[in-house]
Image 1 (cartoon, one colour):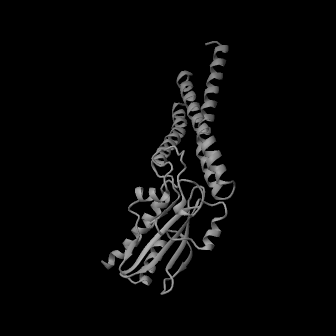
Image 2 (image 1 turned 45 degrees about the vertical axis):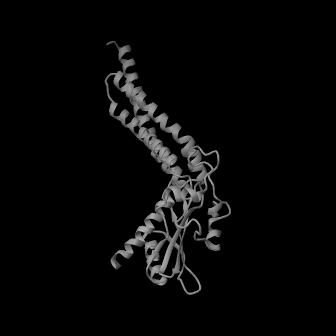
Image 3 (image 1 turned 120 degrees about the vertical axis):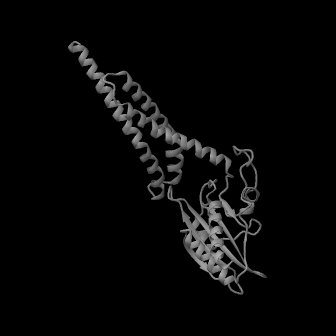
Length: 281
């Protein structure tokens, strides 16, 4: 090989190596981008709408597709240009954004199958209500807490949910979430509910023990790790002729769909209450 050919070969090899390294660095930065979008919202660096809507939903897919394309270009060059090297780095470059795209498709499909609601209660006909202090903490721009009036928009993408009342969707999809009758005095039922609430890791903001003139109440919040979304929770303990009944409600402050988080939270709470009662059986 003459000097000119060798120089061209070295230039091509250097270009391939540089592009492979750059493409790998680009793909490695993608998880950091998504982490910034989510955690930046949680720690107040930007609004959640910017983090979720603009950064993740608008720019995120572009970055993921670009990462896959760069990876395939790097892979092709690693196989065509001698000395052949860099194929493993190129495959890693492809794998990272490909996993991200796969996860995005999975979440989208899951979201399409989950009722797009953000307010769930064990008693939809007479749901526990939030105190004025808790309502004030939610802020003026928070979701409505009028459970009976909440409906899914008529033009919702999934016709199975379109124009349906939230209460109907709760009854249809979360029929296992019902009031918990407790054959114990209200004071003991309240103590069990409080222990179960604390075991969930919620931040207890207020509690009121039941008495002859008032029901027992526990108010709390739960904050998501990503984005720092805050959901408000209220637990109600009422006296009955047979003892007491425990009801609970969990409501997201923002967003139309909670992706099933509030229902899962109430289900975990109910299971914790039942677990508290197990030694008494």
